Every structure is written in C-alpha cells, then in structure tokens.
Length: 172
Ligand SMILES: [Zn+2]
Image (tube, rainbow, N blue to C red; front, side):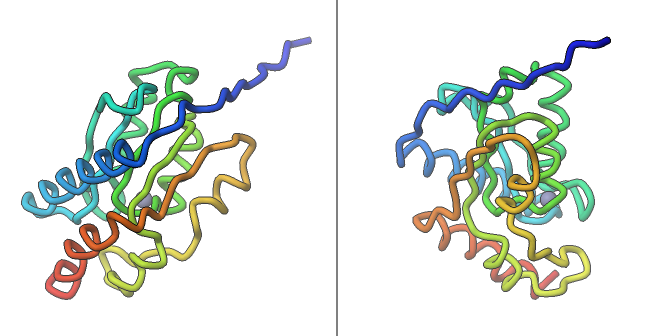
C-alpha cells in the first residue's frame, strides 16, 4: 500500500499595489522587446516569494509557445514545487487555458495579470495567429484542486497594455 502524497498550499505574503504595478510594467517591457523581435506583444515574469525579486522573464515565442507556458516549464525544471507555490507568475494579459493549466501543473501559487482575456479578445478578434479564447483563468483554476490566488485585471495598467495591442493586431 502506498502512502498518498498530500499537497500543502500556504497563503502568500500580501503584495502592495506598487509591487503589482512594478511587476506588470516590467512585463510590458518584456512584451515590447518580444514585439521588437517579431513576436506577439506578450510578456511574463516569475516573482520570488518576496514579491520583488524577478527570477526569470519570458516574451512570446509564437502561437503555440506563449510567454507564460514557456516560463512555467523552465521554472518547473529549475525549482522545487513547494518553492514555486510561494512564487507569483505575472503576465501583461490574462493567461489562456493552456497557460493557466501549465501554471496549475507547475504549482505556481499566485498569478497577477494586466488586461482580461475578454479585453484581449476585443483587440485580437479572430486573428489567425491569436484567436483568443473566452475561458477565464479563474474558471480553469476553479476546476482544479489548488487554491491559486489570482490578482487581475489591474485597471491602472490597462491603457499601457492596450496601447501595445491596439496597433499590433490590425497590422499583423
Ligand atoms: Zn497562453
């Protein structure tokens, strides 16, 4: 008979508003860099448990390799699951079902995102490279077994994110 592995999900250290905005602005810089290199204007980063230290950043790669999923897979290979639970994934746009799922399996316990998927959908429309879904990340997490904390959308950052996407998709 095997002993069942039990999962433990301690609460996170609360983040101040300026920490949240600072992390999202850094995501926008990563997204801008990705866009300058010919990718989609999405950026993600991994915040350490202190809520300040940026452990890693990742811009969009392509239609299948989204910033968040690529980042989470690399983090899962590098850090242990208990440590990652105390970390925060930050993205300038709400993660899609794939990325929320990857975060869930990667055991990253908190998420901050800038604009909602609904807002993004209005910007990308049915663009072939980014036919945005309409499946909120909270719905994905609520279907799982872990109390992933979600902060977003963050109104104070919305204009800065939208500005990047507004011109990008019609011209793409
Ligand atoms: Zn995604």
